[in-house]
Image 1 (cartoon, rainbow, N blue to C red):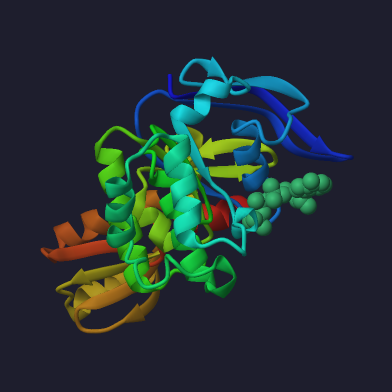
Image 2: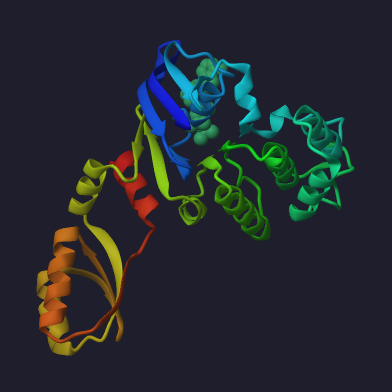
Length: 295
Ligand SMILES: Nc1ncnc2c1ncn2[C@@H]1O[C@H](COP(=O)(O)OP(=O)(O)OP(=O)(O)O)[C@@H](O)[C@H]1O
């Protein structure tokens, strides 16, 4: 078992942040961790790494209690830039991590090149931009090729090119068997990278694959863009039966739930209308997020 969290509770004074939280990861995955500000994402990461004590419950990493000193040989945690020493250079930071994990300098130099850090790695961190600090933190967290990697808002301040590099590196690491959990408010990027999303709501985790969540979602009306070859007569039929938001010759935007979607597809078929594409107007993660946190 990669991660096993049982009955985890954590409060700050009267605020219950993690509420009898259960969570298991059995196979290597890339998971997104998504929730509004102040919901407890960082608290959960800190609790997993035992940087923050929990009030009750147990967390096991590779079948060892997270308080065991050996876990940091197998896992790594990218925190925010407050952990960096502004008077040291990026190179100093990387050398320190390399020494702790007995990694040779060639691997460090390769990573600096992969992350395009050569230009600034020998400068003091005090001169770094947010994106440069994030890149250094990412480099520090992946240098040891951990089997479990926690990334707390790694995309903050990264430009489009850096996001692409970041994605390739995470996918490459995952292909070697690493499990990655990434918290982010960038729902589009997170959807591109991950297989499951974990929503942290009221101190508990809900997976985007949760059957009840998907059932609730299927009952919600959502906007779809449909590319189709529509005739005027069919449009008149559809107009009466569905909530059409926008229409042009080959594309309509329509609000419907899953049940209505099936009827819509059947009606088009009956009328010999070809549907070339039917897709959610906003990404699925965003739709689930709205359903969970904004109603
Ligand atoms: N050391 C602390 N003492 C008291 N309260 C804390 C402490 N750390 C976090 N909190 C509170 O716990 C809650 C969860 O904070 P946390 O930083 O885990 O949320 P988050 O989901 O990571 O937020 P964000 O998306 O803004 O980074 C917040 O209400 C925060 O004020």
